[in-house]
Image (cartoon, rainbow, N blue to C red; front, side, top):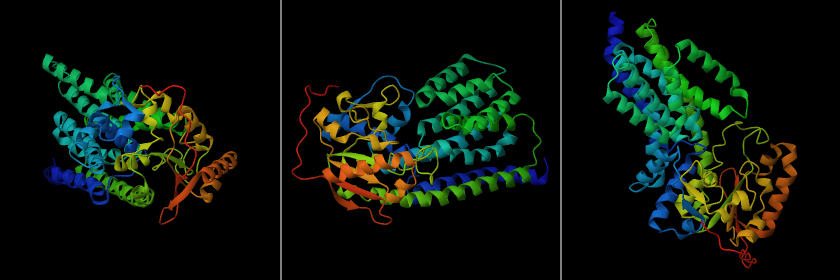
Length: 442
C-alpha cells in the first residue's frame, strides 16, 4: 500500500461519517424530504394508531385494519411505533434518516467483512440512498435494498464454510426482508446465482427498458437495488484500486448529487408549505377530497416529471394533523398490499370513480347519494394555467368538474404565495345526502 493509499485508509472512517452527516442534514434542518408516497404511508400508520386508540371516531367510520400478510408491513408499523412517542412529521424524519443511512452503512459493513481494504467503495452508495425510490417515498423498498446488501455480504463472507447458525441468520433475515419489501430480496438471491457479467447485462437491460411508462417504476427500483449490489461485487472482484483517485471521484459524485438534491428539495418544500397552509382551515373530524390539476403522467402536467408528483398524496399530512379522512388515500383501496383499507361501501375509488391521476371523472355527488356520507371539503390544487398544461382531451372535463364544485361548495380559502390551492367547503344549508339502503359494513 502506498503512502497516499495508507492515508486514505486511515481517514476513510472520518470521510464516511462526514458524508453520512451531510446527507442527513437536509432532513433535520429543513424538514422531511418531499416525497410522493411518504405522506400516504405516514397517514396510514397514523390510521392504525387511531383505530387502536379510538380517539378519532371518523377514522373508525371509514377504515378498518387489514391483518392479511403483506410485504409492506414493516415500514408502516415502524412509523406507527414512532408515532407513539413522536409527532407525525418527526416520525417521518426518523424513518427517512434510517432509509438514507441504511444503504451506505449496510454496504460498508458488508464490504469490510469481505475485504477491509475496499471499504472506500461504500461511498458510491450515498447517491443511491437519495435516489428515485426515496423520492417516491418507498420507505420499505429503501430499507429492503439495505437489508439485501447486508445479507449478500453476510453470505459472501461465509460461503466457503456454511454453518447452521449462519444459515439460520440468513433465513431470519430473508423472512424480515419479505415484510420490508420482497423485490430487493429476490434480486439479492438472483445475484448470488449469477456472475458479475450476468449482473451487468441484466442492469443494462433494465436501464434500456426504463423509458417505458408502464414498467418505469419497477425498473427504476430494480436498477437502484442492482447498482447497490454491483458496488459490492465490484469492490470484491479484485479490481485495481488507486485510493486517492477513487476517493476524489466518489466524494465529488456524492457531494455533487447531494447539492442537486438539496436545491430541488428547497423548491419542492416551498410548494409543500403552500399546500399545507390550508391545515388550520380544515374542520377537525371531517372528510376531505383533494383534486389535483397538476398531476404527472403521459396526459398530465407537461411541465412536471412524468413519474413523480410530489404533492399528489400530501393530504396525508393534513389527515394526521387534523384528525380527518382524506378520500384520496390510495393505500386503503389495495387491501392485498397495505395494512389499512376503506370499508367497502365507503371506498371513493369505487363509489365515486375517484382517480387522483384523472380527477375529472370524480362523481362526488353520486358518492354522497350512494354512501349517505357527505364530502365536507374539497381542496383543488392548481389554477387555470395548470389545466392548460394538461392534455387537451382533459381540459373540458376538468373545467366542468370545477364548475360543479363551485355550484355546490363555497370557496373559503386560497393558499398564499402562488395561490395554487383553493379550499372549498360544503355550502351551509345544502341538502344532506340520503342514507344508503344498507349500512356500510367492514
